[in-house]
Length: 494
Ligand code: B12
Ligand code: SF4
Image (cartoon, rainbow, N blue to C red; front, side, top):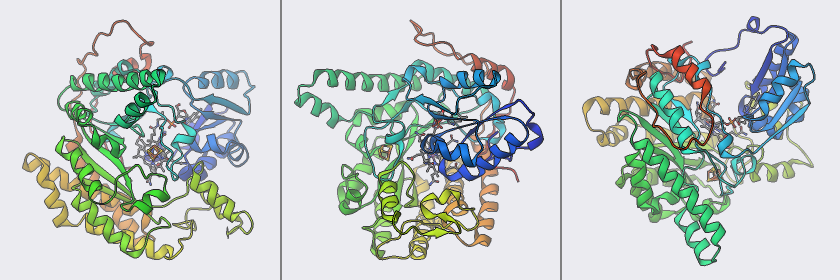
């Protein structure tokens, strides 16, 4: 069940079932309610996912879990199921950080394919950086764990057979080894490191070479650091692989802002505009991601940011408000500040904001030194409105090859803007409802543009020698959905 599509029906759970619940911070409260309901119906309840990894005790208490899995579930889940069937699950399982060769393909065969616009496939876990607002390097580690390219391609081929043609390569950083990393290892004469980095880089190129051989109607997009802008060879390989776009974490446009988030290896000012333009010159569109509410932000930051986004020629942009996610440096700092005299919302300390019912949960948590939360939110809204006004979208849509694509671009831009207005920054419930309706309508129009005919005949390349077991359950997926219409929406119908 994907509760972002539809709510679980309690009657579908029977005594003795094993219910695994995946929670991130934003949906933990709902996850706990589902877990309590499932336990009440006599099921075994097991939590996993990033939030459960960070707060296993919370899942045990508030979610009435029988067991919690910390870290990667791929390998340990089998043991959890066996233990539940034997009636003796452990309280906590250490799933750990498994090797890339052990990652399993996702069970898309269990999901309703007609509800999704795109599928997602993760090719690498872990990130060598340490940005202050991000928990990925803490939970997934700083060592990149790369999946073998053969298994990635097999999963993608299986998805294309089902009719998925848009695929998000759900990596945090598609560029795990930079040219600077290679130069440094060379300068330090660190042969072992150099070999390791070179192997990771070579595997990335192999993956892209294989992606390039897939049907030409396939479109991939991913997330990448700005450093890839220095590496024309890499960007060219991405373009050839049909990786048409990448989310780039710009975060802040000033050196002070970047320093505040431990990301001063990012460019600022004119160098930033040039770096982002390089992606476009090599045929990779950028979705620029910016954060507002950093301590260094002033009222002038908002205009400066949107102007930079326009000047740098990013194709899409998102402007998110600073949120202290658990597991991050920002969170630890904030928790320490709050330790002596914690701000309370009802009986919940604000540092446990995910436990506050959504209707009364504040939109921002950390106070800004000079601006109020309302001011930051209003200014952020204005930035969205300016970047996504009709004339700006029309101008950007000139990057498309024909009128049909241009219309699609306009719809997608509006959809993206509406989805954010509906879920995050707007406090006005009438505006939220209206924008949700708009988002659903736009999504229905966009769905047609994402449609593709299933290709049941599509074959995976024959690899030699085989490096991992075949994807048994994907074979099941193919037989089940061979005739599906292949149109996908990411939004619920109701
Ligand atoms: C792709 C992605 C997205 C995509 C999702 C697309 C899709 N439909 O798949 C999009 C862009 C939509 C997205 C949106 C958001 N995302 Co996001 N996303 C990711 C990303 C990069 C990869 C997720 C993924 O596919 N992982 C691959 C799977 C295999 O890994 P996994 O989910 O961790 O699961 C493994 C284990 O955790 C465990 N496990 C998980 N669940 C369970 C359950 C059980 C029972 C068991 C036993 C084990 C288990 O086993 C799995 C296999 O090993 C992660 C970062 C990351 N590296 O995880 C961020 C991440 C999850 N996102 C994050 C955030 C903040 C968001 C947003 C809130 C952003 C925003 N401001 O809007 C939204 C929320 C959307 C929503 N409504 O839920 C944060 C969450 C932080 C937190 N503490 O909660 C992360 C960690 C990124 C970060 N930098 O911190 N996201
Ligand atoms: S924000 Fe991106 S670059 Fe920074 S640590 Fe997280 S995944 Fe890595």
